Image 1: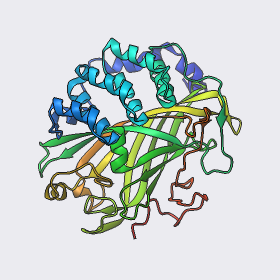
Image 2 (image 1 turned 60 degrees about the horizontal axis):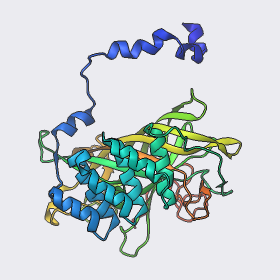
Image 3 (image 1 turned 30 degrees about the vertical axis):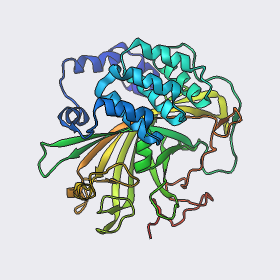
Image 4 (image 1 turned 45 degrees about the vertical axis):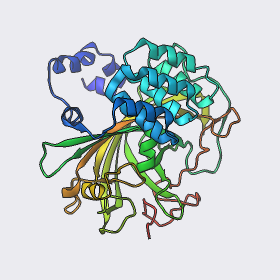
Length: 399
């Protein structure tokens, strides 16, 4: 056994070792917390199926259209496919089309494969790029989305890649003082970005296997129109037994202010300074050996899962008429802080996907084109000079 530990390849190919997990897990009914709470929570979406279908096609705001389609999908499953198909072929918003295309992976219907393969030839390049990923990922096509192609790497920037993340999220909110009533709110990717901020994964080649920065930018929070920035430094491990794939588990413990109003930068009910907020993410990234940065293959695609805790101020939401879908509502939180812990009432989890795409319309992949307002150590950097606005500050200063 000592020899096998010294030789991981021998250990991985040992037949007994490969079968060990299967042998000890057979019939074990243990479930994750996210699975049990999913079965217990009631949906907080009050619209009828017909209303959701109309809103998903007719609302002016693409984020609201997408959000309605996700609610319909969650409720109706494959029976919502006719409405989703219309949106995929007729909607004018590229983000919405990519996010609805992603949702086809969750439906056990052969029509999903036909739609996805058809969209690999779509006129919109982002839809086309993502259709190729999903078709490969689901086994609907043998064509690998990674192939030789032109790309642009911008020297002198903090991060070697800034990958735009599509995220869907479940919020399970404890309703009342007891532990037997939970509400469920599903956030589509554009709606999550509207409430919590648009996230980018920001790897640096030399350190990407042990740490990564997630940079978030929130629009619409400040009355003067200025952007709100947050940054998170995640640390962990990456398993690299395959040459063009990394399997990672990362955690962050980021100090940030906790606004007791339940809304970012709203000090009306007080602020608890320097609360250490944990968050976890795990998944896989896939390298394209034809795209080189600093002599190493670049990440072209990343996917994964996340989970953490948040504070939703139900009293404030109820007093304001029940509206939830606005920038800054709900703040990430922790169970451990003596003042904040008792207020933490929301478990959130979900999935994320990100891919390198062409952002400036020149038919060339852009590795680090998008701005990431963070330093390599997860501090806010609004002027993108690599130096923090204030050392140690991970959230835009609300003052």
